[in-house]
Length: 299
Ligand code: CMP
Image (cartoon, rainbow, N blue to C red; front, top):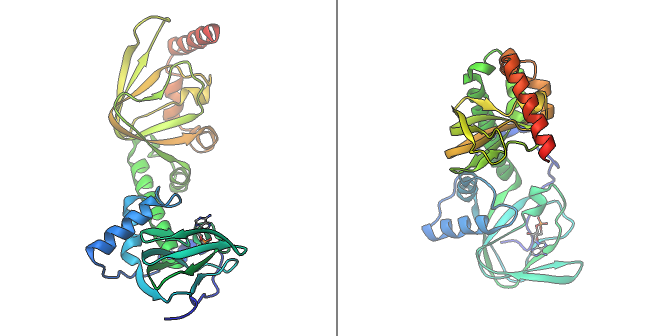
């Protein structure tokens, strides 16, 4: 037991290539401790958006530590090396000598300096003997980064499997995997609304969508086609008019990979497949123009 956590001099940011070599160590825990840590991580405003797998791995890698009443666990202004979950006892949080709050069991603290690479924003002192679970910065950041690397390679593999993108070089596929955002929809959700402006391109990675068009105000929208995994949509608003020419709604649960206008232009815009779809025929062009005129007249 020490009066003060040993704080090592740490780099302010880790090199991602080093993180793949880091070995993560699991520590045994009772079922109650595992549940308490998981709940604490999921309850924390800054960590609750982590993926479930990340939460489980952080929980697995936390090791136990005990400190006596009166110990300074965290000193404001120091470099941070640990994120903690309090299992037993109470701690007090102070900033520039002023009390901010007390924290009891089942709460995370010490996350800010690690998540934001800043110095400790407050001092945390043990009000009683305390039992903590802790994970160091390197372990924590490795878990964040590894999940990112796995996702990146899943996205690249998926894009490579889409016939339209098969001619793209590896470095472009990798850049696409960097910039895309995964979005999720439930049955009947509108992904795109006809007549709205749009600056995103979508690739379906799971599920099906329905493309429908309404020719005149008051008419029932007509289903034009159904698209599924590996199909893409939204390119017309990026290449010509920036008004959506049809509505796209989810059929069941849908996951899309979304690419913004700038990345689309730089990385995909030149693809023959994508170009030829837009310029299918004069009839399609005329229809797009008529729709654009129609929507600008009703707006
Ligand atoms: P960190 O800045 O790493 O170290 C001090 C910790 O105190 C901080 O992370 C938070 O976990 C916690 N903390 C800081 N400000 C507050 C606050 N206003 N209320 C509760 N906890 C806080």
